[in-house]
Length: 246
Image 1 (cartoon, one colour):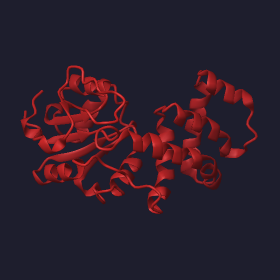
Image 2 (image 1 turned 180 degrees about the vertical axis):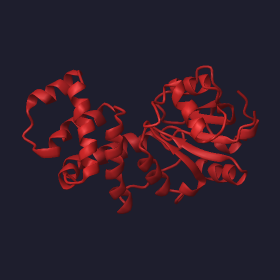
Image 3 (image 1 turned 90 degrees about the vertical axis):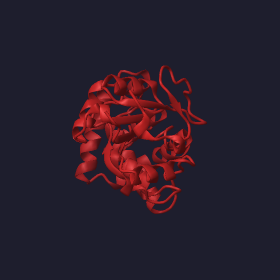
């Protein structure tokens, strides 16, 4: 089948890994204690906090156990801050954490402290694909609100109108075949009509096994540059999605 939909990862694919690791994560890490205190009465934050606490109680990692035994002097929701900071330090993909981070980043984008850099070829390629009739979608471990903030406050301006679908780990983890089948169903297309681009081999394996066409994003600064059995791409200006095959 012909490719009609492009499903794009963000970190290491359209945006440098360094922005997430060196800017977004530290910003959220520093803000978490005050954020939990100031938003303690918000029912949505309380629900997310319950998810975090449940994960913490089940976490058998030495550092998590040590934090539980430490008996932090912080009160209320702020008591979760040390564990959330640990998760950020270890880049754990806990959905509730991603949601909280997205809410914190919203303020940073709003006041101009955060502006998302994109690779130089990304904006014009997204615009070209959109004009050519391809449906664009995002699938990232970052929450949907965080994805929309990033594309809404990028160095190329607000690119959100170019995208029709947004997916995060609430749809399923990125290393599982079922997640990509579900995404295709939600977009109302066959998996064979979707091209997925990511810098993670495990994600490409899962998407490929679901029937999607895939490309390995090989960007300067990415921690992994081994494309395995997949074709690599480092400049989207050369990509015509219609010519990609399984």
